[in-house]
Length: 123
Image 1: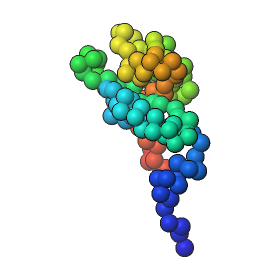
Image 2: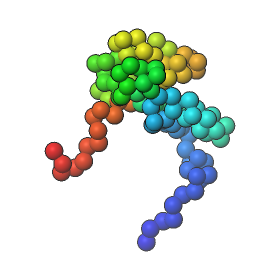
Image 3: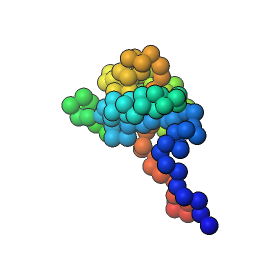
Image 4: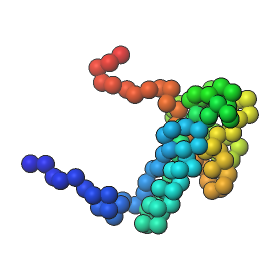
């Protein structure tokens, strides 16, 4: 017998922290901030993040950037880093997450999706 799924309210009430990631790249971290602030209003601490990807109007080489293509980040893993207000690509392009880190005066997670998804049994 399976349990009924928890409601959003039950999940929020049973949590103390949340990781909120804008996953579209190119500024979705700004939209994620609204959700993060709502969760903060509900009593949760939040950590904000986004993808290492900027729009072509911002970055002449659009697409997800790898760790070797960025500077001034704190690497947590090959595909996950903490950005600050100065984090940028090697050609000087600031990420939206870098700007958000500067505004919030705290690090923001950058996720590189170049690694893909590990699937068990698939080489």
